[in-house]
Length: 316
Image 1 (tube, rainbow, N blue to C red):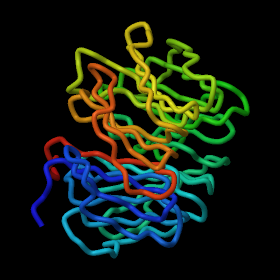
Image 2: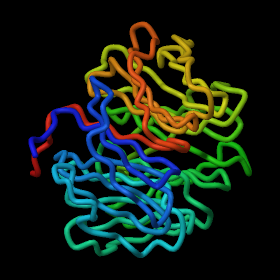
Image 3: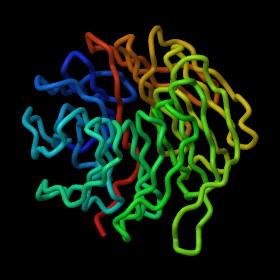
């Protein structure tokens, strides 16, 4: 199978994962996922594999194969896996689960190398661009920084007591972190490097972005600079695009008929892909805020999407 230059995948409550031709909107591969729903999808930096986070396992599928079987399974979580991602060189994977743990996995052997206790259901985990700290957000409203070198929690924040942190995002250069919660609020911090290489949070802004839940927040990638945006996907059926300079609302993406669960920028930040309970995924152009492609094929809510349209990052 020839490697597509753009890999776009979605997953749905219909227990399938679908791969799409981004430009034409054609679905060219469907993987049945009967064991559970898929909560999160992520593509490895080298574009070879797709990780699907389910309940309670993570499965890795070969992007360039037609095999319906996973290549490998990661099996020590005991509840829904809500977050998954990769170290930049692809050697290890991290995950967060409603079982209250954040875990680090050896990608090749599928062994769990580290486990951190959050003491509440973990909804979101992001890797700091320094590749040395994980930041997690949980159902009780806690944000924790896990220092991988010290193998401990280096920082704890509670922006709003008993308000679940749904989504975290870090600017590509490590200068800013945003946390979005169940009340439609985004908390924004500047990240300062402390003397012990511990990341310190300096409050920068509080943004009331939506009246409903924010299900995903995402900062734009490096090649979008000098423009820097924050996308917020919400239960109010919209995605809002905010200019990080002053957090002015740039545009509202209107078209989905139900909750918008997930979003992902193209590598240059010119496009955004969204996944919604209305069963569709959509491709939006950031310059006009128009939906230029609708991906139709799922029969139930489409709850996550993954896109890799950049160059493969070769393993170091």
